[in-house]
Amino acid sequence: MKTQIGKDINKASQILKSGNIVAIPTETVYGLASNALDPIAVEKIFLAKNRPFFNPLIIHTDSIEKISNFVLEIPEKAKIILENLSPGPITVVLKKANNIPDIVTGGHDSVAIRIPNHPLTLELLSQLDFPLAAPSANPFGFISPTKAEHVYEQLNGKLEYILDGGKCTVGVESTIISFTEETPLVLRFGGISIEKIESLIGKVNINTSSDKPIVPGQLKSHYAPTHKLVFGNIDELLKNYSDYSKVGLLSFDKYYSEVPKENQILLSETSNIDEAAQNLFDSLRKLDKINLDIILAQVFPDVEIGKAINDRLTRASS
Ligand code: TXA
Ligand code: MG
Image (cartoon, rainbow, N blue to C red; front, side, top):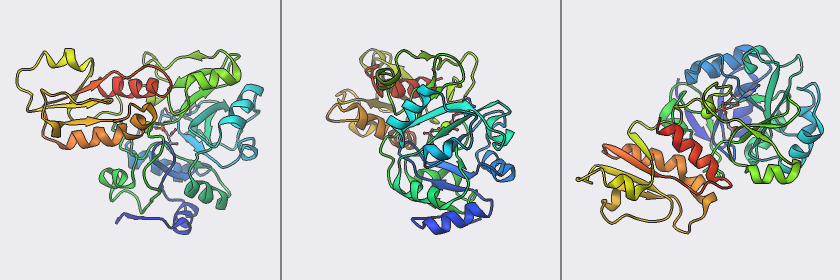
């Protein structure tokens, strides 16, 4: 199969209506989408990604009204989160309605749903009379795509069409929060900060650990580049090397004079943590293409979206 890249929403919508997969842009990362209500269409996502079937998918739709068709109820706090933060990088886990096939939820009685904030994809969703199941558009376990070319590099030949929406503006996946228990539970750090969530609905519980993964984003090793990656204090880590010619650096906002400049990527020259998140996955891919023995990545300030960056780098280093 030849994979095309373009901006044709009608073409994307035709392919989806015929039960096939399309890569779609979102503000977080590109998704690999198909009709969430058609188990055979959903199976094609798992096959193209090589994703284990027990891992449930997020479904994407374009309004809170539509969300209520796919869940038993929207609890009050979930409603507050959706009304204030959607469309946006937030996914809510709610008790599912019967129309959601088991293959989407991995047999769980809950479903993860979000309204992505990207004009092309919102337009596409408004043309469809079904929601889209979409995990990130990368082979299972690898770095998530934040540009159409990233999808092409890794999935060329496995799908007909990549809808090109440019560079993702957030750059890390959505924050996942479950409302299936009394106290809301954050399952994955992402584009919306805990600080923001707690300012809207008060204290939440957090379990993004990998001891008992409920979601693949919680698996210990994930988002992995091909080169070995070590995550820590770069000044300290550099002391372990005498030859820096094959050491790569991923830093927040400064260069290190010991290491060749072409081996270094700064995520934000202006120390802007949102910009750092936006550049994270693209920069990991760039470093991965250089002939290096090792990538050293800096620990970021553990606030706001920095928590999501640290989470992804921890998993990339496992
Ligand atoms: O930003 C995003 O969320 C991107 C874009 C494409 O929307 N999607 C994404 O999908 O990151 P994926 O498959 O890489 O991660 C989805 C996460 C998984 O870790 C999955 O297990 C979790 O959502 N999930 C899905 N259904 C769930 C459920 N019922 N309970 C708990 N977690 C669930
Ligand atoms: Mg993923």
